[in-house]
Amino acid sequence: MKRLSIFFSAVLLFGAGGARFDEARKYYHLSEFGKSLQVLRDVPQKDAAVWELIGQNYYGEADFKKATEALEKAAALDPSNSDIHLWLGRAFGRRAETSSPITAPGYASKARQYFEKATQLNPNNLDAQSDLFEYYLEAPGFLGGGFEKAAAVAEQISRLNASEGYWAQAKLAEKRKEYRTAETHLRQAIDAAPQQVGRLIDLAKLFTRQGKHKEADQSLAKAEEIAPNAPQLLFARAEIYVKSKRNLDVARQLLKQYLSMTITPDDPPKADAEKLLKQAL
Image 1 (tube, rainbow, N blue to C red):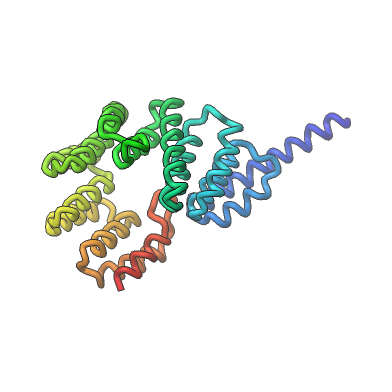
Image 2 (cartoon, rainbow, N blue to C red; image 1 turned 180 degrees about the horizontal axis):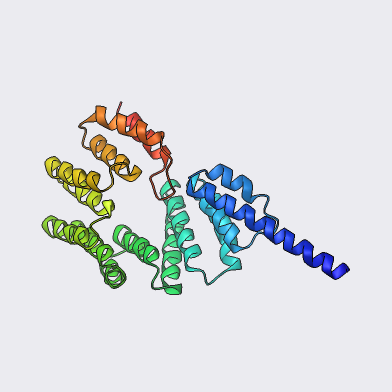
């Protein structure tokens, strides 16, 4: 009887923890990071998945130090998990962006190492390949970046996903100031995934950086036909208007609408929208 009692207690404990984890995950996907963390604190036995979600929540709250600490615990429990290493790379990357010039290089190097590890653990992890590509593309050579490395990863991305591969080729071309080639590749990315508004947004941003505002607006209009109420599109339109210093009244309306919407972790943080709103005043 004693053994049965222990067994049933364990089952109840596991079931309660699983229910809490599901609840926390729902809050996370609604960008309710504080509520998700509150639920996760009560999970009695924290496994790798729980620590990973804790880290993702802290990342969403822009507490990147706590994010790396939680994700390191997750990686220790599940060292072969590619996604955990991807999130560690992202968290250390944000720590590099938000820290002092003294500590930033060390965090950046850790980000690169975790991105590389994530792709080694699972070469088919498209998100990891894409983040590693962007690191190589943007980081200076002394931090492990470089166009040749980025180009090699772009080839792997192309093998995994045609649209993402064209996007990577476009980024490379723009870095080399080959703007027509970049535009061609982005149009190929759009053709490969015609329902993805993200590629149309990328094309609009490329035009904006070249001062081609009419072409940028045309690309945004096509995106609006596909997903008129997509939060990422509202934010992108506002961001483009603010950065190009035009249609600021419209930008303010879009940002206020965005701040009132329910968003997901894949959408830009509302803190970014608040910053843009101040710039649009």
